[in-house]
Amino acid sequence: LTDTLASTTKTTSTTTTTTAAATTITTTVETDFTKPTASKKTRTKKEKRSEKQSVPSRS
Image (cartoon, rainbow, N blue to C red; front, top):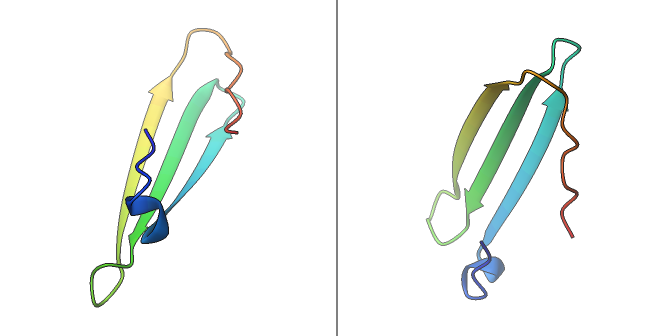
């Protein structure tokens, strides 16, 4: 999901943490520099998995 126009004004930082209980917590921080105050949106996704899966690395 890449937008070439937004790539110059937005930065997205994704941190994936996998706990020992096979719970994957994905935290995405999106900073929009088009806003005067550089608003930050933080989305936290918590997934409980029955078995461990490898997280695909972002290129």
